[in-house]
Image (cartoon, rainbow, N blue to C red; front, side, top):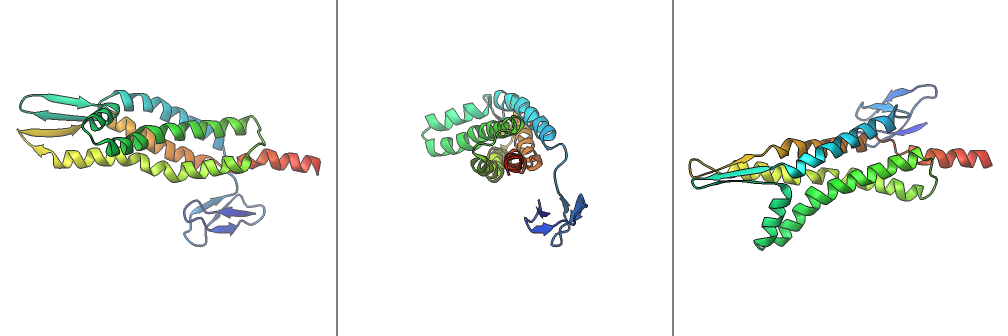
Length: 202
């Protein structure tokens, strides 16, 4: 059986009768099939969806000046950027911070449901969707990097300070959990039902 390395993507042949082997290039562990892939991915997707609520409702950045203190959520920050004329930056943050996490959750949920229902339709398209989810996942960290950059720059006590808000850990958790969920999902499950159907008719 030929297995793709999860670390360096090298195709390697796993000896017959062996469940676990190691990549000859990077020595990463190779597994013929991921055990409990659906259960683990579902758990991570549900946990990510739960964290997504406080990530968008709690403030992610608090700025303090001599006169006042202001806390902003992700959506409030996007609205402020748009109304201040920085609509390209607002669009980037909207895509990276809102649309990508939601898209990943919806896509992973759809893939999990289609596998559980034993769907044989659009297997190639579903595999491409999974590969896209894998590739774009890291860009969801854009907001975290922006917040860290702002906090590092805006430190002029007592005139002005910036501190990360309570929503940041939840936002980071959403990004990390969805990335792990994409890693634990076994895309070969998409093709299992089609393979079984072909064998039954062959």
